[in-house]
Image 1 (cartoon, helix red, strand yellow):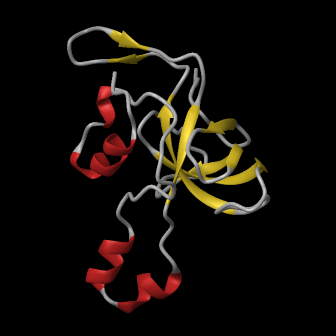
Image 2 (spheres, rainbow, N blue to C red; image 1 turned 90 degrees about the vertical axis):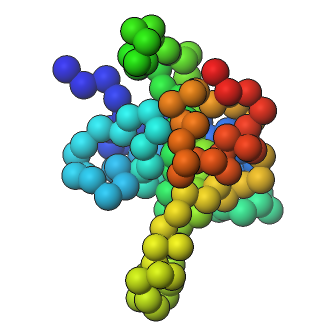
Image 3 (cartoon, rainbow, N blue to C red; image 1 turned 90 degrees about the horizontal axis):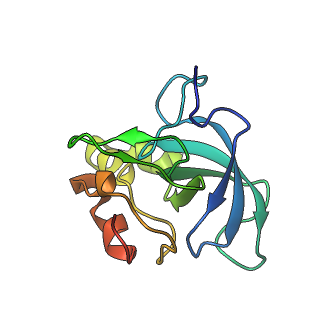
Length: 142
């Protein structure tokens, strides 16, 4: 039984990019029918947004699932669960950056947040080396 995010799942966006609601197309760099778990990147379409910001409606974006309704077991045996599926938007590498060289492709695929502020709590599982900037932008880490 699968309880994570799948195709057509709706996710709320909690950063200052202007996006409010996202619809998941599939996980990033994984099988298209696979699940999107907490801390995993995904590809989505912007369904609702505010005007005059970084993103527009019907735009395809890359996001990161920050909090999930599904219980996640921690290493100490406790569980963590949130009341809402929340995501933030990440910078997406362009085709020119990927074709230029291996070094520029590696640099372009890093997990850089698109916005400059995160309006939700971040779980401890996201305090990894690759999510360092995301934990700095967020105020609360649980």
